Amino acid sequence: MKEPLTQHTKHDETTIRSIEQELGVPNLMARILVARGIRGPGEAKTFLYPKLEDLSDPFLMPDMKKGVERVVDAIRQGETICLYGDYDADGVTSLTLMKNFFKHLGVTPLIYIPERKEGYGLHAEAVKIVKGKGTDLLICLDCGSTNVEEVRLAKGLGIETIVIDHHEIGAEIPPALAVINPKRGDAQFPTRELAACGVAFFFLLGLRRVMHTEGLLGHTINLKQELDIVALGTVGDMAPLTKDNRIMVKHGMDIMNRRPRTWYRSFISSKVAPDRKIDEYALNFIIVPRINASGRVSSPLASLDFLTCEDDEGSALRLKKLQEANKRRQGIEKGMVDEIAGILKKDGVAGRNSIVLFKKGWHVGVLGIVAQKTMESHGKPSIIMTDVDGIWKGSGRGSDGVDLYGTLSSLSGLLIRFGGHRYACGITISEDNLIPFRNAFDNALEGYLKGSKKTIHVDARAGFDELTKELMECIEQLSPFGIGNPRPNLLLAPSSIIPLNYGRVKIIDGNKKPWYGYMQEKFSAPLSGNIQIVASPALKQESGGTFINLNVKQVL
Image 1 (spheres, one colour):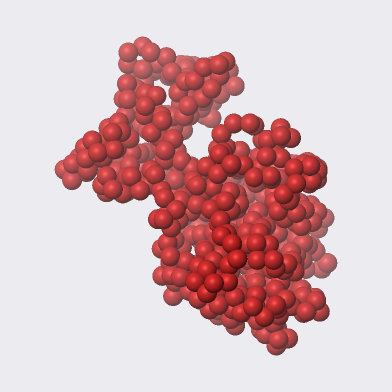
Image 2 (cartoon, one colour):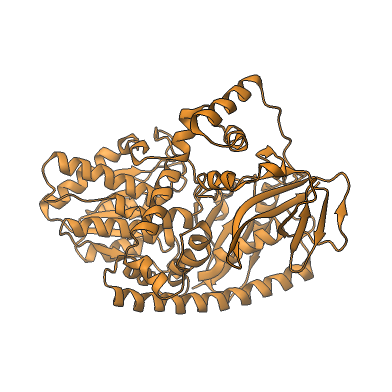
């Protein structure tokens, strides 16, 4: 079902007209903006044309000043700095940003990325290893917010720690010198839902500002050119594309289009990515999976080496390795997805609030993506686990309306460790607690999903005559599209819908003009009469021409 369309108030109508007139956009575009919470021409202009000057002040982040000043001291004293990052796209891009910045300063930090079999987060053994390499300052990227004991161990060994992260924080904040995380309870930073690479970018903005003020920079460091990396990590971690995230991703994608750096040029020259304007599809389904692949089935260092390589030939060779890892990942993933589909077909999922599966022999590197596909197929929070050296490790993905991290927090007594956020998590659990956890997790979700119905948000009711090239050019200004900022859905009233092949449909409007699109719901006979559709319009190129394609989400 769709969310009901609310009637515009007199104030809304005035706002719509003022946006239409002052920005020179179609009335439908103004209606879409107002439906998305825009309250005037000024807000509309800021949203459609975000400027880097609109980014929030990095020093609104808790502990930012302490963390920046400690890094400045470490650089001045020539101390050994170790960057410790997570193995996924968000962690690797966070490491890339920091490594690139330190390179400008002539500083070569140690790098430590745990492999998937070690599990998510900071590990005690890793702390001992980096101590053995002479680490004075440990910077945790995309992890560390729940690693109280590990940070305490580092402190006891004489290592100071800075946490730069975005995951939910537990009841106790780690005893680090600085915990820079917009999800802290005392945070005043306007964008709570940053990806870790976004937090790292703001840290570097703060670090550059202080170093410039103190005369420590020998040359200008252009952080704007790093926004392609921020865009990659932010989209890869499915952070909402609103507020600061929107500004960074929009500018990052613009940089990829206008001044592509070595890593992205390799994607194009190797014909892995199409040689056209970068879009959300290419980021989500071509680039991010390959950056994630090495961390899933081999060493995540391969992705870091690729993103930081500045030589075209070397970059192409590194991309080839990522391609091979991705192909291997796809094969492993397909085998697990097919196996799980068979298990669920046999056992059924009716009456369950969740899907929790565990089996020895499953590949630990693809648990997260398999959990995502399981959740998408069945619409229920899913956790998939396997045995790693006698301890069970798992990844979970939450569905709409479920706070996955909050639910796990209530079950922490059954877990060895856990981390994550509302939509994704990683857990470690003993074998004895597998079945008790499965039952407790399902019970904890009681009420979340009972009676819930999938809703489709509708931005505006529209006439087919409003679907113009001018409108579509304006709609593209709403991009990048993704979590928190989906493509607009419009409520349209066709006279009939005729099924074609492979999900294609012909839509006839009230003036008998044909439109074309796709529809997931299968039907064999034409639909007509008093019908309405919820559809998302997008420009599509085909046979040398450009036309408006309607992605039909629902027929009412």
